[in-house]
Image (cartoon, rainbow, N blue to C red; front, side, top):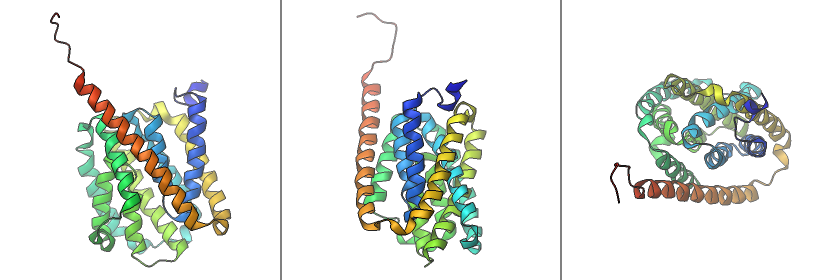
Length: 261
């Protein structure tokens, strides 16, 4: 019975994920971005490849919904319509293709995407259109998960104050992860196997959100961003290496043909 709470990964792994869930939610509400990518990178090192994106999506749904609930009064609901239309289109398109990816390529894609989010930013056209941002980010989230940087770039372009930025970003990401979770369910992902662990991760994320809101004014933003970029870079490089290694060994292993030596 206790195994359901760690999904067969063991308590040391589950405890690590709980700590990361708390810390990543703390990061996101304190700095407006970053937590989802950290959670994604750690999940990708500890979970089976096929479970990375669906589990991350449901955990982030809970985390963002908690953050949105806490900061509802700051949301810019007038920006939701165009983004929502784009998100539905992007999720449907991505859902029709995601089942064709191999595990190694998922790891490489996640790693490259995280690296790209550290060293660059989405192009200007994404910062101007809510619908285009919704389509593009929601399509990519079906493959790579952590598309918060895309969405945050558009939100930043709206010249919102800090609280409105965090709240509106949480609103967008809640919708995107909700749509993604529904599609993965339709595609047959067995969320029930992961339910106990996901509940614990969401709870840890809510606690991290509450703590981050309290500690918001006490954190050195510049120093934290430097550490965050270093951590993300190291994790991303590890994912790329792991994915490339899987692909190499898979291609180097001859398929059984029943022949002799």
